[in-house]
Image (tube, rainbow, N blue to C red; front, side, top):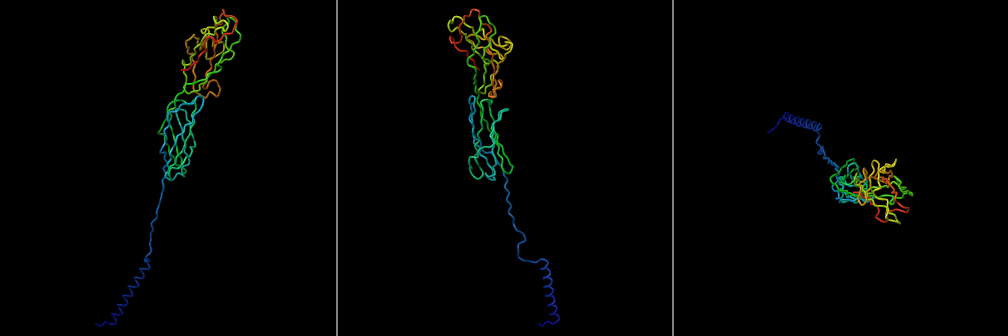
Length: 303
């Protein structure tokens, strides 16, 4: 079949029109075959430090007039890595008493996120007995922190003291004299343990001071008294003094021996002063030396 020229031209125009429209549409939305979006990987690490282990501490006993060093081992965890662990601290707390180590020793890394720390804390003889809480804290370089207060240990009680002088001396006495005090008082007691000694629990067992030449005469134990204060001879049977009894312990009225660091040497902290007195020097006494040599020395005890 023959196609007329007019129809032929019409077909050519139609094709050209489609090509123009297609070309215009492509210029508005070109198809290049390239990606118009890409995936982005986002990683965020949340650091949550933890104290995962605290070693057990057995019951501890004070060292008389000294100190003991108590060591605990700690495992610190930081999931950002052990390099982010800035510091580990530890403390022992009982009531108002706190002993601490503000910079525990970094002993070794267990793995990338866990490290062992060694914490040594000093306890003193005057630290109170009882249950101590163990507190451990961790700080990391990002400002995060963690604490663990899950464990305790026991600090035992120690009853101990010292006294000075260990021998009392008087000036030359006259038979019949009253209220004679030693030349080297007071007798100073220092609490070298951590048991507070309460009133009634400081006791003295006095003996007779017999003549060293003639032991048939003596300054009898019942002629002595001991007080907790001095001045105006108050220790010689006055208020706050206690009369001695031969071969029997006498509790010193009002005498207490608190715990404390007696080395401050104020006569009060961890300390007690006692003042002996001979209330009566018997008129029957002869000229000689009198001492405890023929009997036994006086005994001061705390209970």
